[in-house]
Length: 374
Image 1 (tube, rainbow, N blue to C red):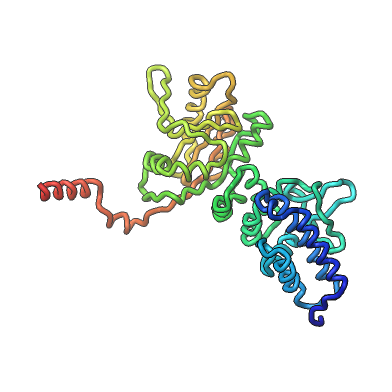
Image 2: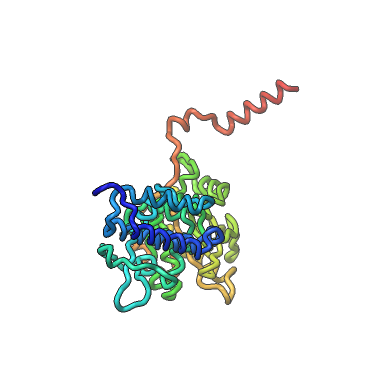
């Protein structure tokens, strides 16, 4: 290619771009976000097309960046680097218009649709017909997804979840780093035959496997109550990991059945499923008898706590590890809805644990300090 040629075609196109920016009232649109992202999308499409067919030579994006920044000095987003990112962003999603629908088909609308690579000439400019959600998330979120995700169906998943849950950029980054895409909806459950279809689909999508509790540190010898207390101490991160809709009701929730008292580990109410959710914690490998216990608790909640407006109570059993076939077998004849998942946490190495003073040793040392200070 020859060096950049600024001809009448380029000048006319640049004038159209400038008018488009002015017509979008970009300064106001920045706060609205949607118009800004739509502008970036259409700009990216045109950059791709002009790079392929125009005879302007090298340095095209650099010149475009200079021209736009000169015309709009108070607006960020027209640097050479950002224009290149915009082009890469459009190329990544590669929306195409189909012959039998007036809307652009994408994996964001239907995650099962796989979009084949299309020639630039078949890429279509986007107007208000495309789904609104894609343009609602901030540009910083789009850049983060572009930097960290390689597959479009996975990117579409995080876009949908960002829209559903109104994630900040830091929360989105956390969910990507903890691999939510490959954990969501992966628990072993009996929901398909214990819940109505709509509730079953939502409940299955709600569960993860494994759960990421790496914000807590436990020793290998930790008991269930240690895990329970640690999770409650970090309730904000715990609720974030559980997902949207969980309302914390309490720990060691008392259930009086006959003459005996029983206590669930953790009790929640799910605002979307409209039901109570029991979470039982086990620091050991899954055992079939765990199902019997949580099944008993579910029946007790349904009988003693649930009212007519609540859907059936759901039980979630979290174990350190499990055999999926064994879990499926254990759930086979259970009529209450139960899901079983593993969890991960930060384990304190044995050599460090042994070097730490015990609670008794710490208490003795504090008592000595009190005596010395008298």
